[in-house]
Image 1 (cartoon, rainbow, N blue to C red):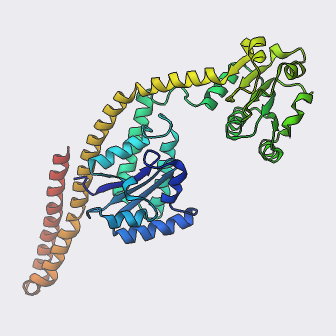
Image 2 (cartoon, rainbow, N blue to C red):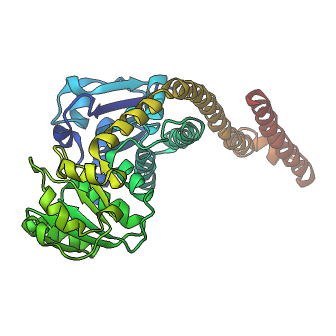
Image 3 (cartoon, rainbow, N blue to C red):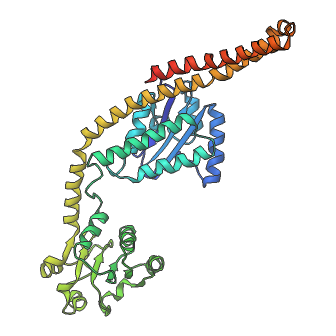
Length: 397
C-alpha cells in the first residue's frame, strides 16, 4: 500500500561533509524551484520532495515505477551510486520519521532538523512539486517528531560545548550590561557570542590575531576589537574573559593575569574553550570558583549524550507505532479519494440516461409524466450516492 513512497538519500554517514555539496541542488529558491520541476518531469513521478541540510540530501518520490540507475543519474549526476541509500514503502516512511526525530543527525536530539523539514515542504507544496500524499506524510512526520521530543528525553540536556558554556555563564548571574573580553574570532567564539546576544548581553571586546576577522565579528555585534598583541595593555573593566583561539601556548600568562585581574579577579569569570588551553594553570588555581574549562564542559557533554542515547529504545517504539498509524491513515485517505469520484460518476450516468439512452422514450411522455420520471431519477441519484458513502464511512470506522 505504501510501495509508491520511495526515498533516495546521501548523508554524512556515506560521504565526507566536504563532499556533500556535490550531491546538492545549487542556487537559491528560484533556481531550486526550476530544478525540482525539471527533475519531476525527468522522473515522471506524481510528487517530489527535496530536503537539503548540512549533513544530508534527501529526495522523497511518489511513483509506481521501479527505481533504476537512470533515476540515480538524474538525481545525483555528480555522485557515486554506492554512496546513495534507498528506502521504499514502510522503510521510507520510517526513515523520514527517524530523520525528523534527529536519531540520524550529527548531534542526537538536535531539533533544528524538524524546522528544516517543514520549511522545505512549505516551499515545495506552494510550488506544486509536493502533493497530497507528501502532505499526509509530512504532517504525520511532524506529529511523530513532536511526540518524541515531548515524551522522551532525547533532546534534553545540552550536548554541545557552546550550549554548555552559555549555561555555565548564566549560572554566574552576570548582569545584562556585563562586559566581555573575547580571545579569538573563530567559529566557536562567533557561535558563543550569537547565543549571548540572544540572551541580552551586548558589551563585547574581541581580541584576535587576524584583525579583519575580529572587525567583522565586532561589527555584527556592535562591539569593539583589537589585535591580540594588545591584550596585555587592556585597561577597561570587564566581568568575563572567554578564550577560544588556536594558539599552541597560553595567552593569559601569570604576568598578564595580574594586569587583567587588577585586584578584582575573584569577581570575574574566566572561561577557556581552547585546546590546548589559552589560560595558564595559574588562572584555574587562583580563581577555582570563577573558572570554567573546556575539559569539564566536554565531560558534561559526554554524560549528557549518554543520557540522550539511553532514550533510543523508547524512541524506536514510538516510531514503529507511528508507521502503523500512518499506514491506516493512508489507507483511509485512499478509500476517501476513491469514493469522492462516485457522485460525479452517478451524475454522469443519470445525464447519459436522460439525454441519450432513454431520450426517445422520454420524448413520448407528456410533461407531467416526464417531470415524475426526472424526480425519480433525482431521488435515485441521491440514494445511489449516499449508500456507498455510508458503507465506506462505517468500514473505515
